[in-house]
Image (cartoon, rainbow, N blue to C red):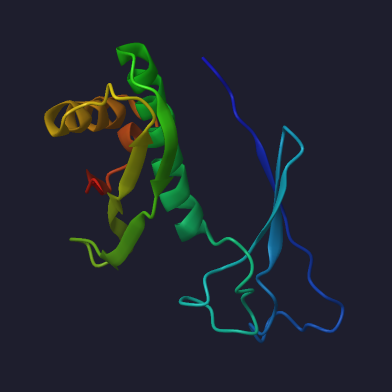
Length: 155
């Protein structure tokens, strides 16, 4: 078993009443390795200036964590197969909709990985699809959510 921690820090500004709901949603995420990330609610959910467009919002972080987990497993499986990856880029997209209960949820995430291999020994499309399938099956984050996660390879 492994345990992971994150600290979320928010402070009301002295000039904010708060109960009028006109307060900043900007906050920080701090992680055990020392990284601090500026975060906020999404401007799609809470309008500016009460959100910070520069901050990472939970919806973006959710998509990034799915993409990152998938990539890390993909890279490991490619290395085990003997294929050398030079770069891996994913422009993942998440869609927020109401679920069958009428609640807003991240209903689907589409990973759009583009992988560049360095040598003449490269996987064929079927092998590439299998690597992505394996990565999806092993991804801890994808295994933890009800969101439909698909991979749309960029060739």
